[in-house]
Length: 381
Image (cartoon, rainbow, N blue to C red; front, side, top):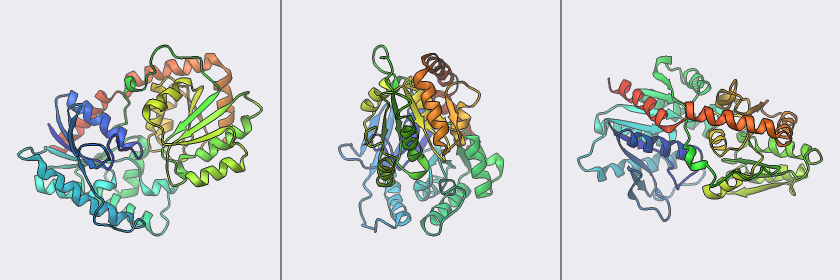
């Protein structure tokens, strides 16, 4: 099967979890014998037409025309014209299916399905309504929600990464349940394994991702404040960039943990892997999380994982003994869980063992690619 994927980000251009998802899925599809082309955005130092691990990656420079930074929807719609233009490089190659990832590529997906006369499949990685706790503030969130709604109607089939997300998409966009398919994220375990034997864990707590309010990093900072005198030598690194970073720094300062919590900004994968190799635990403190691919990455790196009982995170961990869960936003519960993992090596080892089994059984990219290909076949009927 020939697949044309559209994604706003593709490594080394990484904004959130979509880049890892699309890369893992595309390369696994190629291993399964499919032909895959990814259209994404230009990244400094990267060629705009290259084949990486069997995936042809085309990149568009969307810098022009200039549009105001505060008009996100207009800038995305404009950039989608550049994504469509990339397909002029394909020559006689034509896809059997177009796969758009999230609302950011909705316009290109809708246009290309018509130009090529093939079905459009859309993966909804998160919704704007969900990011705002089930409400839509006036302005930009309403505009984004409108594009998300339109994308799910224009697509022949829709993919969601968790049961939580599937319910949100069906109810929020009034879709027939049979149109929405559950296909989780995956993880490449080999990419996250540390070289050599794992060193003894330090009282180091690691968290990473886009720094937005809904990621709950401020909850982690408050939990670390509680643990200052309960866990000797405790430290925390929060890696990532995002619009909430200045406010998160304020939380760290107010909670009096600037000496314990490091806001590291962007950390390359090799440095993050080294951090995880030393970590006593990984924490995903999200208030809203459709899936939580970072939970899989932390498990793959062999770090005991603690996550908020929300959305897709709860579905990954609940009843598996592969991690500990705490109530979202409850820093007391989170502090107790961190203390438990950092002070009980037998518990930490048990979590690692069960996590390894879970990843091999359920979350390999080859398995995810096979399930995605089944959705493509449904769309082509």
